[in-house]
Length: 296
Image 1 (cartoon, rainbow, N blue to C red):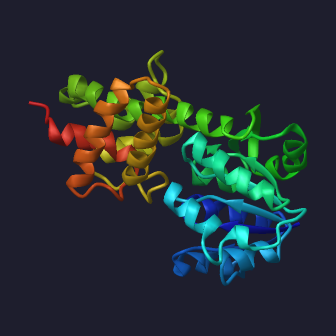
Image 2 (spheres, one colour):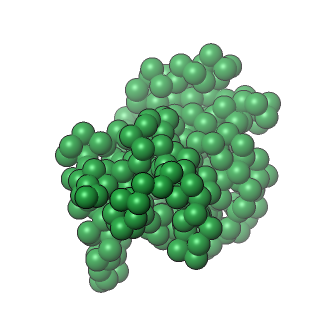
């Protein structure tokens, strides 16, 4: 299949490499062209614009930073919607408000494209392994058409409703994870003074009823950060987490609800970003709280 990827940040690049390894022909476009280099070196084609990308492929995957980027890539002068999209499939993977993805879907479908949203759970390693969790929204016929490709990227696919439902579910599954990083930092303030090996401590937390699933995957990185060591490249950085938390608050407001845990957690992430931690992986957050409130 000839697949175009609009947006090759960490996740888009990992998905692109996965598709290349599976034998697909892949074209890529990114607002920062230098980020396309690893994919070009791996055999991907470089598109001159989103319109150019969409013109020459069968299926377009868009995975963009935020709603502003999504609007520009779809509706700009040389955007995806400027191409002849009749008969093509668009799979939208960005994490945005449900209303925003519904708006884009309506515009894309008006051009004759099939449109499915599939924001995913998981980071770059699961993406490279085809082990993401796909949270799909769309019409049943469109989802059936997209499923064979999604099955090459995801270990689990959940069709949760029409377009917009996937965005709702993505915000919902991210909320406990992002709050859990802060909860772990606060828990560490109660036991860090014991001087236990941090790797063993995190393994213990992962085996308890309160241990989040993320500890099974990111536990070594969290332990390294708590010990003052570099846990490795960011897969979901603090600045991106802040964007998702703000999106959760905006969606709750639309629904006439409040999210007090999210509000307080966002304040901590904002403080961390203000001290230069924004580009660091979220696994640094417990260490940030420990540094801010040192054990005595």
